[in-house]
Picture 1 (cartoon, helix red, strand yellow):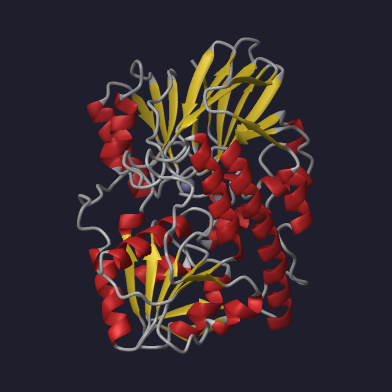
Picture 2: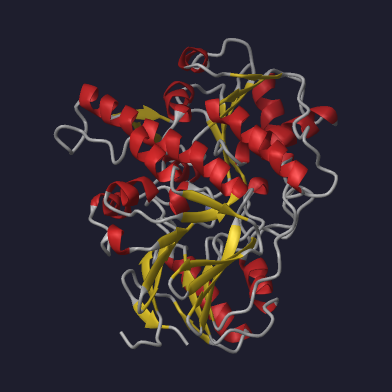
Length: 460
Ligand SMILES: [Zn+2]
């Protein structure tokens, strides 16, 4: 490599929506932006088990944009396999990612146990991808920084994080490597997030790496959103059934509980018991309360975010198990959000065959997940090695989406201090990435590429 030149490599989330990992290197320094887990289809998930593209011990530092598993969930493997540097992230991301990674380590151990007992794994004996102890070693490397802090994270490489408005603590990352500047969008939120302070204008860079989760879509105008949810809840309760909402525990659960509180307050749905079935929900609420005091939330939203008198928490596995057959009609909010793991999977096994029930998916469902299969109208889904018939009502409430749509992604690019020279479109299904690339090419005068996994480019 030329002394002066910096190279950007697309190690993950290229051609797919999970597994974010981007490497920036120059003579003397090598850093990784995001270290995400692949989720969804097996052809992508199997990459979690392959050796990482570069030797983990050769990486000087990692920057994490936000606490979703597809951006931080591979860290325990990277650390176990030799990465020994700092992990830079915002304070809220550190708090949420610690909850998420510990839970993920625990779930990985549990799933390996189930697979061993049920004999349905292709690994013999079934092994966890990583353990709770591996997750703890990753969390021990966290180095929180504030938005706007300019930090030297490796020899000749600096990073600045700015608010992305996607989930609490989320950031876009400007990396300065020698004379080159590259801006990573991370995942971008909508300009009007119900809880978070609005995303910041992007920082200057010649090169931009932008997500494209909804690169081919424009969200329907707000106002009417959650009307379908309210109607489904009323209908389900009226026929004597209960409602199961799948929501990612650390961010979506808070939004869902706030919305249920609002729907009950306005009389849009009856005041029935609501159960937050997640040991992480309370911990996450505390992180939100702390963030409220730091001013990371929308003005007017204080530490008492969820005002829901009928709320109770299912903390223990026994309390959660009791929800498999809830008895009296109620609303259960359980994780994970794409039904790919967590307590919600056990509930689905019991609830999906029941015509009285209603299952609500909230937000983006990656291909290959149970959540996606349900949204696409599957008549049966595979759970723990068995096929379960789908007789329950299934709806998707897109009003909870925390991803910018195509217009909002373009608005973000247009808000840059000067137009970028090159834009790389990642973190989208192929059709979404290509659609966004087309629009960027037409509407902004710059070079646009949808990179392949493993592709390397020289930075200006
Ligand atoms: Zn995300």
